[in-house]
Length: 137
Image (cartoon, rainbow, N blue to C red; front, side):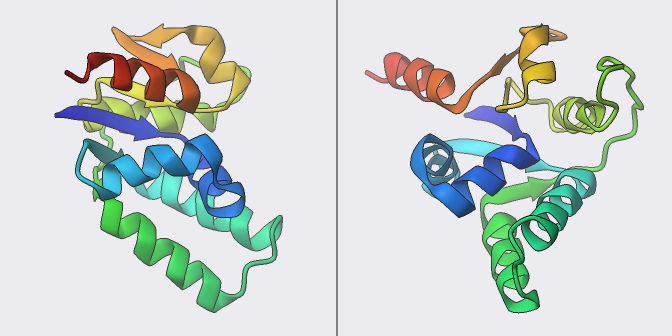
């Protein structure tokens, strides 16, 4: 099974706008991919939903329950400094290493500009979905 780490912007986009990010999360819900998440990514996701999108405590609990249902929690132990322009992006890569992910899915320009990290492609949701569909028999 393909192991994936998603950036907080994927969870936020999926929950707020649907589209390709939601299709991607539905793959985790359906058991087609294994989605790793760290406390840092979850915290950032919930903070943005609260501060930018004004989610109520009840909405935040619902979002957290949904995310917990489709992810496996990992605990990064290797601090990274691979994205000096945005240190928060390093938390995504740290999660990906801890989860032994095959792919990182993000909409973040700084991460996407890396192209890959330690052999893991860094892709937009649409590119990941297209590649995944191409591998299906």
